Image (cartoon, rainbow, N blue to C red):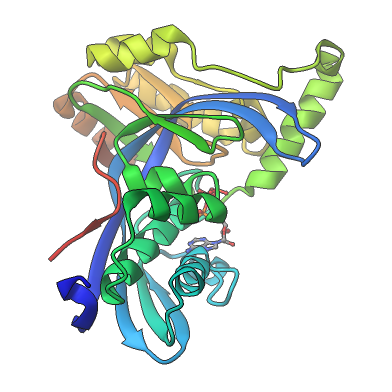
Length: 310
Ligand code: ATP
């Protein structure tokens, strides 16, 4: 039994992510699309504090869009805690406090980070001491992005995005993130992609049901050269996200005009991620976008996954 079993509280920090590459293939019979993606964990974090309690509860603070975060069993952190409790036969509950920094419904996997953090926090609070492999299995049952939030770093996701393999990334990449006040629903963006493909007649070509990440993306990550990575940034969901939010194209254009190497919609959006050549240029891009009334954040990646702190 871990020494943390009798702690008053356990504080875990888990990162949000950017998809530096996101290829979307055809839709399987179960409704999920075939994916090939590269996740990078970035220095924008969710904090989850777990305290002993008889029942399960969750509170959320930190973001303006708090009303859109459910506080019941739909909350991914709550589901993570309950899943772990059943798996290890824990009698009793937990009070989870979530301090959010990752934009809600922003395409940065904030809910998944909360779930990964809750798993690690409850495992320590309850002294269950599960192996990484068992935590990974539970994470995978909660959602395709949850195992990545557990591991962090840079990783390739294939299958339905759930088959995770670490990718070698050298050095540090500086990003400017531009969050939006209004989130975008992931299912809506996927539906839009299907519609756009139908309109283009791409369905006749049958998008593949198995995809790989192109080698140049992996080479660029290994090189540690932002210029090389900028050339390979790609998101199959971008056209669909821009269809819902045409203004994001202007944000990307402004970021590049201010010195960013390239910009991309992160995952299903609407957060825009602008890759910068170095920290100084990133600060210039941030200042320049601020002058246009946006609220850009300077982050870097890769960073580790869910970790106990304090
Ligand atoms: P996805 O992981 O589906 O790509 P996202 O990264 O765009 O989503 P999230 O902030 O993770 O966005 O959440 C998407 C939706 O999930 C929210 O609108 C909310 O209704 C629900 N949700 C469930 N649990 C949480 C949580 N802990 N934090 C935020 N949203 C949550």
